[in-house]
Each structure stands twice: as C-alpha cells, then as structure tokens.
Length: 206
Image (cartoon, rainbow, N blue to C red; front, side, top):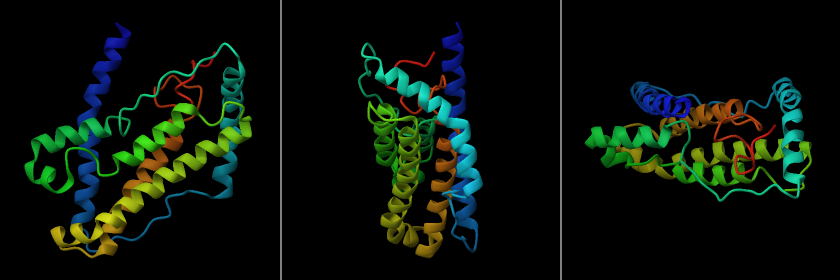
C-alpha cells in the first residue's frame, strides 16, 4: 500500500517538474539578458558543511561495499531522475512545437545516464569514505559540465530558432545545469531511501 502510494505521488510529481522546467526555459527565453551563473557552489563553507554532513554516510556505504557477501545489482536508469525525463516526454507529447525543437527526451539525458552509472557504483568498491565523497562531488560537477556542453552544441540552432544570442542560450543552459547540480547535491547523498542515491546499486544501508 505504501509503495503504491509512493508510485502515485511520484507520477503526480512528473507534471510539476516538467512545468517548472518549462517555466524556467520560457522565462529565460523572454528575458532580454541572461547573466552567466556560478553553478558549482564551491565556497569553502559549503564544501565543509557537505563534508561534515556526508562523511558518516559514505563510511556506512563503504562498510556495505567491503562486505564480501554484498553484491551490486544490475545497472538501471530512469534517465534524468525526479520525473524530469518522464515529465519532458509528457510535455513533448502535449506540445508539438516543443517536441519538434527539443525532442521527446531532455537533450541532456545522456548526461544523466552517465551520471547514473557513476551513482549506481558509488565509486570503487574499496573506496574510503573520503574517496567516496570526492567521487560523488566529481560526478555531480561532471553532470553540470555536460549539460552546459550540450547547450554549447545546441546554441547555434536555438539562437536562430528563438532569435536570441548564443550567449543567452548559454545562460539558459547554465541555469538548468545549476538547478540540476544543486538538486543532486541535496538529493543524492548516500544511505538514504531514495532510488537515485549515491551507491544505489548496493544494498540499502542499515
């Protein structure tokens, strides 16, 4: 019953996720300027807080991975988590013009799948808690950079489509990359009950 309710809630969230994303993109498309962001959030105070909050969880994950009886599950992915891929698909099915320009799936979905592969394994099996923390952070930064690179590749075509400069298109993608980076930093910590957690291929933590 609880699992069914969770699935129902997850399905209900798909539309809000897609609509928030659409609102973000539309807002930037209508803006006259898009200032570049600093999405990494690498301030020493933030990094120190993340480390303090996470290292114990990474240590718990390391113990599970070091147990010879532990087995990693086969790789699975939902594309871009949190209902983003599913919501995008629904939005594309609803809006033909949107689908014609942006496709049925997020243009950066390959970035999400590559990110999922890193999260599934949660780093090397013999990684220390510190190594695991750094590996997760590197994976999240790679996701951010991949989304930005996707925007750079698409900028010439989108610039013509929307009559914006390539710099404005880059600003839109920087905003999306920032949102995704901050979301995975908050929602991807190890040893949670979330299916997209760092090390989700391994058995759940005690």
